[in-house]
Amino acid sequence: MCKFKFWIATISVFCGCVYGGTIIYKPNQESEPKQISNVKIISIENGMITMEINGGRERIKFNQIVGYYDTDLKIGSGFDDNTPEYKISVIERNIPKRAEERSGKSRKAQFFELNYSISPVYEKGRNMETLKQPYFYLYVMTEGSSGVGERPITLISYPKDASVSSKIYDRAAILEKVNSSKRENLYFRHNVSGKLSSGWHREIKIPLNRIRHKEREIIAWRLEVWGKTDMIYEKEWTLPGTRIASKWWTRMQ
Image (cartoon, rainbow, N blue to C red; front, top):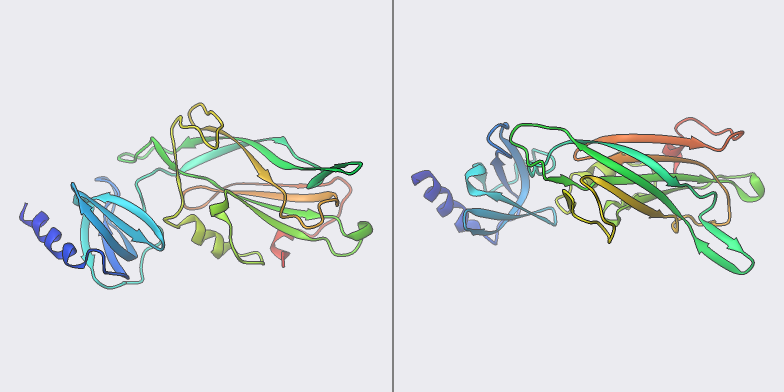
C-alpha cells in the first residue's frame, strides 16, 4: 500500500503536463518488464492510468507499473497492451483486372475483396479476447501506356490508419504505423464495418481508387499483412506471360 501511495503521489505531480516521460511496466504477471517512452499521463482514476503515447491513448492498471521517469530514455518500441500475437489465413474473393470497370460511359470502382481468419497465438496471461487490427499493404503494378513504357506501382493501405506518407518503399514507415498507439483493436465476435463476423473471421474490400490510370490492366500485385508486431502473411501474383523484376514493389517511387 505504501508503494502504491508513493507512485500515486509521484505520478500525480506530473499528470497532465509531462511529455517525453518513460514508464516501465509489465503487460501481464507472466511477462518481463517493458519500457515505453514519450509518455504523457492523462489521468489516474479507479486504479487505471490513461496515457498519451505518440498521439494515441493507452490504459493500464496501476499495479502493472514497475517504474516511472520524467525523462525520455529513448528506449522501447510500441506499447504492449497485453494482446496476443496471431497468425492469419487469407482467401481472395474478387481480384479485379483493372481499378475501374467501364461499360460505355458508365464507370464502376473496383475492390480487392478478401476473407481472412485470425488464429491467436496462446501465451499465458494474455488477453485472448482482443487483438490488434491487422494492417494490409497492397502493392499494385499496372501496365505502361500502350502496353509499354514505365509500369506504375501504387501502394494501397487498409484500413486508412495504416497509410504511410512515404512515396517510396519504406519498411520503417510501416513499422512505425504497426507500433503506433493509434492502432485500433478487434474484439472477438464483434462486427466490423457493418459486416457480421463469426469469431475471428472477417471480410474486407480494399478500394483501388489510388491507382492513377484506372483503365490500365493490373499485371502484378503483392499483398502484405502485418500482425501485432511483424509481417505475418505475404503473397504475390503476376499476370501469366508478363516479365517483371524480382522484388519489383521495392522500386516504387
